[in-house]
Image (tube, rainbow, N blue to C red; front, side, top):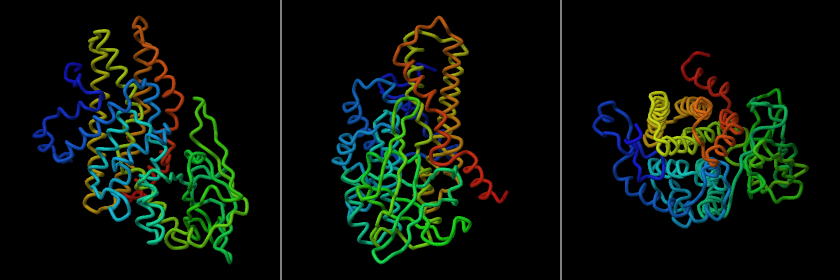
Length: 405
């Protein structure tokens, strides 16, 4: 198993580059088009230089690694807003290009948190539902890494019941008067804007009716952002409070009262990429390096590595199939929910199984960086199945899509 991995490649992901394309075609797997290989190599060359010497325990923070300077380096290469039309400052590339870029960034452990939400969700949402003025103002700034966005969905005491939100934006002569709060808002303390789901009419009991989406300038009077420190000592979530915040009328995205449909489209953007596969890949690479360095080749160790890579290959194939749906102009909401549910389960299982393997091999000298990586992922792994929708929510979406409820 170990000798089949490309030793010259910096990332364990590259085992997939060596798969026989004829076999993949026979199995009718979706493949990354051959014309994307040069783009992949360009990205990989950049990342090998930009991230040289970064330890694994920092690579494991890729999703939550905020580095505005790094985001601007990507923007200078045209790698933010990759699928956004050129008229709005994007590169006008296809969804497979974005898959390749996302995969390389996450597999390398690049710090993507600063721009991730704006690039992946906010920009496409504004492009789809926003006015021409909103597109022209916000999207070029997103593509230049000048505007970072967070999403305001979850609220205190609401759990995963998004339709029960209480934050209200009441229409008035100036636009909307906003009051309420959001919680578990990723990197709100580093963002300039929030796209929030709020109630513009009706009552909480009305559920999905009367919900709208608004863009909130987080520098407005009455906005308070408080970071939340987690068990790992990081602060990538925040709670945000709105006290009589006056929003202009052009803060509304799309149509008033259509927020529920729009936010589901936004969540489809969030769940449709390869993000739900690679959160733990830094630890998998540590295991590969350890097995190589220790010349451990017993059947148990080889079987563990084989199982993990095989399952990752299946997940990657599923994620590529979702990308193909985007290319074909189809909605991947249900398919993406399947990949997200399956993917986060894999990411968590990988951490548990490698931790168990280390416990079963007490005589192996484990590098300190691997122990730090394992420690971080053991603390943060529980959140993998929360971000982007809990298992219960995702399985409800899947069940409805299959006509089971």
